[in-house]
Image 1: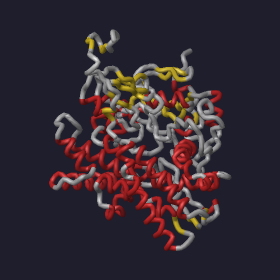
Image 2: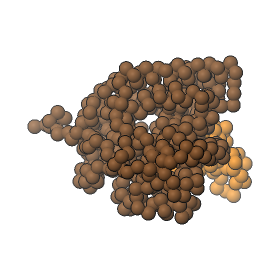
Image 3: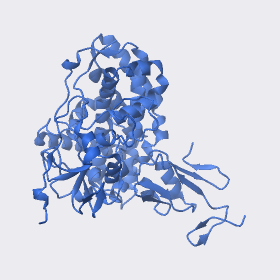
Image 4: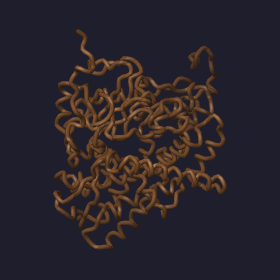
Length: 85
Length: 402
């Protein structure tokens, strides 16, 4: 397991790195995620892209707040952390 | 010699007065031949009009286009006065700070939880409508009270006050149907009414959105001001029902006047979710394109350079009929897939209540089809009266029989 995910110049271990995805086909570019968690999301044109997998409450908040639930946050084991079921 | 803006011919816009749910044929020609043109709206400075889907999405979603920059300008518009638009005239981050007070209440999941209650209200209203005899006015008995009761439940507004706030809410969609004095009086009434309810909730919290928004604002000293909260809450109440009240009859009208559409839906009610998306695409709700965005820098749209400081209006109606994106775009195809329509807009100002509207429209169509399998217009098409002087198209009443 040599290729651990890297965020910026700070290597993170597999235990604390989240997998954050944005479904670009659902994204409506509301920008709510980028406003809620600016370290984790940015608008590219008018579609959101995830920037970082750093575990942070704000990323969960963003996923919970997405109007179309295009954001999914999972932990390393694949368990969905947000949006909550 | 340089050509200045004043010498460039601008076409009067809208091209024609709204007629039923017809889409002006000029849009298709413009998309093919001249996708970005100079237009003059009834009021305000000249604007660019974008008609292709890709350009309209750019105008709505790209941060190089601003709503906040419209403040202080003679904005291209269809209403004689320049209304205070609150959140609709904000960019990020101010817009997001205000909108986030309510976003969690409007996610797909939270709205889905309101579906059973919405179905129950719909069934009650249709039973009552059946009891009044036919023909009955769908607008009065069903399309108006259904969204009002749902938004009242969600916000925590007494539905018994609907006779007041529904009348005032016309002010948010009126262009010339109300005088400017009446519009400002109604907006003032709405704000005073909501302000008093917010004060009530601070004294006596309840499990409703007004309470949640008041608490969220009070917890954040750097957040939106009280005036912004009041205007935003009033906007949620008014916009949170007015457009769905209008779209339920529009959707039914579209289904009943497009050959085969109603039969297809009756034969396969599982099509309702995709039918609602297609109707959101196909029905030209807006009477004209408004809410101009101002370019913050030079931006190229389909070969035309929009200069920094110039306003652009994007036509949702034209974008939703763009043959580059939708095959056979003028056909109402209830099973269309995929259907990336922009009936709710796009970008940061994408309709906050989109999931609520979707759910309500699905419930409304489903309930109507189940309760009245023989539902039809109760008057000739020529006898139907359409609203005028409004931002949106809609029927003043809709007699139906079954």
